[in-house]
Amino acid sequence: MKFTDKLDALMEEKNISKMGLSKKSGIPYTTIVNFYKKGSENIKLSTLKKLADFFEVSLDYLVDDEEEDRQVSSIELINLPLVGKVSCGNGTVVMEEIEKYEATPKEWLNGGEYFYLRAKGDSMSGARISDGDLLLIRKQADVEDGEIAAVVINEEAVLKRVYKQEGTLVLQSENPKYPPIVLTDGRVQIVGKLKKVVISF
Image 1 (cartoon, rainbow, N blue to C red):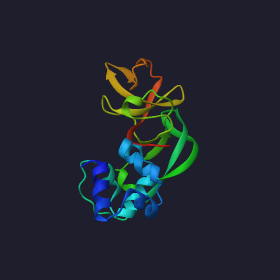
Image 2: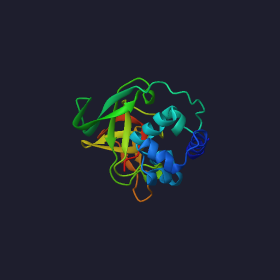
Image 3: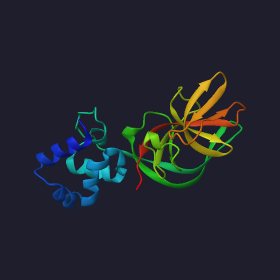
């Protein structure tokens, strides 16, 4: 069931209109109207949490079309760093210039170490990743062929789809105006796998 279908059903159960939902939840009416234009992928995490708390359902139920279990467990939040710069020296990944910490539902995490990067530019627009979006990254030194990863090239962290071809890394954007980056000399290091995009307005 789509996010907006779930939202309609939840509002019907509470016998509440979009305007009523706005007044009771504190979410601006225009934001609620935009849900129906853009879907759950374009909602800030703080807004999703307000919806989940108001309707007493889990975040996963709201945002995952396949999830039908509405039961809400107490949402445990973990603060993760929003990293401004990633450096790789002597094979060690170092997070630098931490801008702030983002409260993140523990249910989004599945073992390992996580951090956020902020998307820059429009090179991944085809994957619904826009400039300014928060990117939840699971720290790991390798990814499967074709997965989207955070990679460091000449001390700059970028997000690309990674393909491996006989010792060569091909970094593919999701925007046809950007050509693939082909690297063979080890100037790139994979630092993590993209796990979730948190839209930022």
